[in-house]
Image 1 (cartoon, helix red, strand yellow):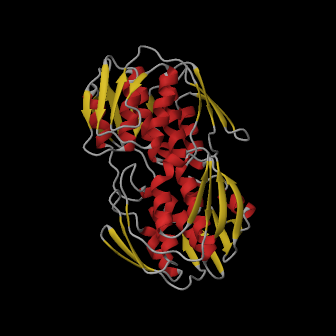
Image 2: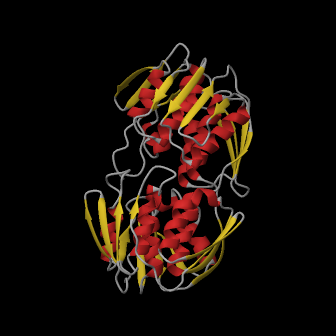
Image 3: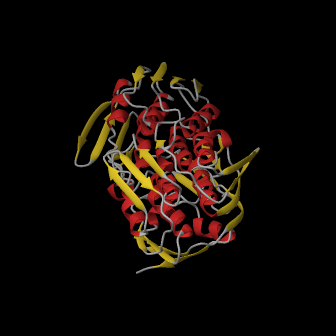
Length: 419
């Protein structure tokens, strides 16, 4: 276990390179189960969640090699097993259930332990299972394990009641080796799904409608290996944009600005200067933040994964801002910790009211989940005095060496190991 110790009120300036997307790398790693051939993934971040997914793959006898200095991962699933009912590993990350579709499609059978992840609200797997059942899976659940069976999956028309990212990904991967055509309507449109589709296309799958809410997959009998570069992490990019907006002037390299439109729009509305230049974007604090209103929505709306960080920015803004959280019902856990630092945040149901204050002061706080932890870092950098952030294993699930990147920008932050 570790904690971050942060001395606030340092003006940050410099360049930061954004790492590959965790939320893109994880489903693509699972998709490598669909073939016996070797897959080579580039721009794979060395994060806790990625390491856990790699261990999950190894638990079903997949051969993996992660060259962390080069951000390259090699995966060969020629001897893979159908059973991934490892409660200890599968319970650590939500993305573990993304192995269900590929294993079922390839082997006609899959045993999967129920997934884990951040406690930010109810995230049932029912949409995953309904979609797989439409493709022909027989499903049973007992003792924390889901078992799926089929003779061979068959293409189907599938409508998702909610545009779930995970369910969309699982269904697309399962459909890759199914007979016939699968159409997923009301599909999630997040860029990470488009990246998964690009990888599957390189493996030989015909996919139409990538990036839209209707995706058609033409199943194949066999898929080949592929080389693929994972897209940059838009949430890490958004987080560093918020850090620049709060604390100085930061240039972000290796970004896809088209994935950041809702964040850019809200920051400009708040009075932050933003300059885009190809695969780079510069964010500059102009002296004051004007608080605004935010409503989280599925992509291309404002991302729920950026809501806690924006709440942190607004604690020192001018006026009052309101956040409506429409995705997860338990995603204001950072509010209590920010109030401990002197913020004025009131939450009621799915809404939070943030009134800007003159200053925040450092204290001991706890990262309750991944993005809440990122919000605490932003406030710690903006606060007077010393802030100690515990339970940083949440933060390290999704941000590669964030303390080192911040120190290169001029931040006074250090990681301290704890018993």
